[in-house]
Image (tube, rainbow, N blue to C red; front, side, top):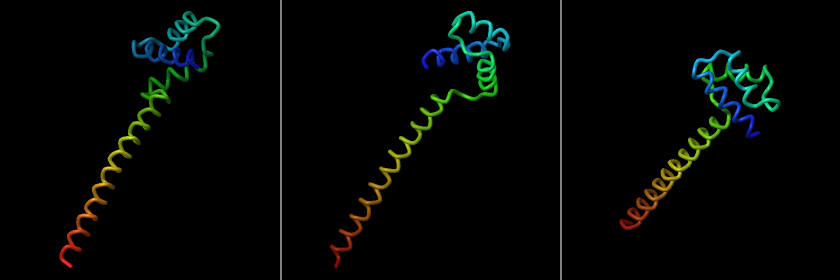
Length: 96
């Protein structure tokens, strides 16, 4: 798993440098030898990065971070609304 991830980073690096698919395949095969991804997989990842798609793990981290922030903000709003209800109730009881 880790080696595959490293290879994806290398593919993205080569693509960002402007290397062609053929150059990228050659570099990956040279660097990783028998443990390198297949040519089809390298091409697929190359095209994903070329199209601007990001790694799944990075995308999941972004989504997780966003959900965490939304929960945190949502929790604050709920506490504020609850506190306001308590304050209004106490205010109305005081005048009764």
